[in-house]
Length: 56
Image 1 (cartoon, rainbow, N blue to C red):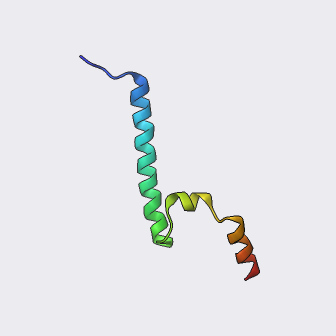
Image 2: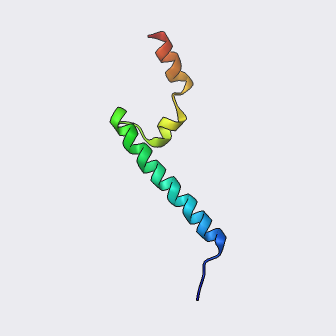
């Protein structure tokens, strides 16, 4: 019987959870704004984008 070490199982579970969350978040973001990625949504607007919005 060849068992995987517990660290491999935990790391796989974390990676799987992150992948599932990114798919879920991506689908929700697409409902609001279709031209941005999950990373861009999590980062938020840049300083120059905030200045531009303030000037409007």
